[in-house]
Length: 598
Image (tube, rainbow, N blue to C red):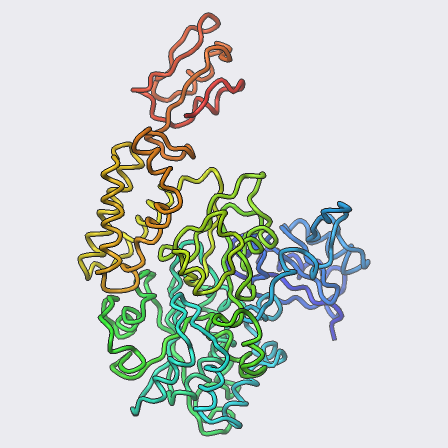
């Protein structure tokens, strides 16, 4: 029996940072020190703190080593595993604000201290490719319980009583959706897991599937029993190869152990699962477009009703929940609806996983109880903006959401509060922006994404979003007027009111929220022809201060288009703004801070 486990993150982030080479080095040095019988190497899913990856955790010592490189492994093995001495230079720590001492206790490190892991409970803890490790953590206990002790209606009632709402963006009560499907009388019904995670900067669902795939498989089987379904689909984008491979392994292992397939646990209940790969179209995150894609058709939404719970895939009753929603189900069955209901707020039970990114010190996966404030997530968990920059806004809900400002930092994070403030929970992307971000450019970025991802079925989305992008581009490039801003606002409301599906209906949200909170930036762009954040290239102007210029000619030598003239050692240099392509080469070349950007 091994006395030490070396847990190595094998999620996408750390894998791209060379964690497989780190694993190989551990195997090599553990063998050289003769520790094979004492040390076990475990590949895990994401630990959450992606900013510090690759991460290696040593248990039972509860030591987390950060930003580990292959060349660090020899020291960890020789010092920690062989001699029992921690390698402090690599160890994850915080600084006590009062004493300035280092804090090594993982439970007291700010990134983890305020988190409560339910959906992520096994990520970074178990080997996702070994079903026995999942079973050792009470895996498939919930499935066994519902198949032997509960009726389908009792299962639905438990999920209903828990208050679990869909974590994919809409926040629809999960139990109610299951009840609709249970009530339908049909010889065939289907369960679908929506793993088509497409928001920019979002990686919650991918990380759950990479780190704990069996939690989703178990929940889908429970859902199948609850509504009377015997087959399910996991719809996942092909850009998630690690998640796809681990799902395939998990399905095979579950079938081999009698936990999927025919006569599960000898109860007579059959449930099979099939993976369907999506091509990465954002619109296929919408239920009816996803169903069309599974059926082999082009992913385009259809009007509702009928809703999928009545007429879904192949025309049969179908429930669709996203990955994170399913990841909560087994824990609700095991611990009871009252336990889950006690976490979070009255109308938003449980926890929520966020992909925290952008201008924040600690980027990564965060799972907090509903009702936690934005300030707690951004500053206490995220560590605030780097380099003491001023916080400006946070975008929640991705392209479908909106920006919230400093005035909203003490707002609780729950479904209804965010919608009331003009944003939304979405699937859980949370992008932080600081003083260096231009909010007009941010709106343009999201609209550019939406234009690319629109399926084109309805005119408001196909034509309207393209026109919004044109207007935003005009503003960013100095062609905008006050009338442009008025047209932008009118068109945004028209698209919201007339688009066919959720993609089009929420597409104007980033525009409307930035107009609401940062209209002064729009006005600066169209009236002063200036970008206050100095981001929009067409509105920038490089100038040389004649009093500071050393007449050294470095800037002129660095200019690729000959826009800078002057006489070395005799007269200050000048920039011809007509020729200048605003590449910044002159500013990089100047050692005396004589060139400014305005």
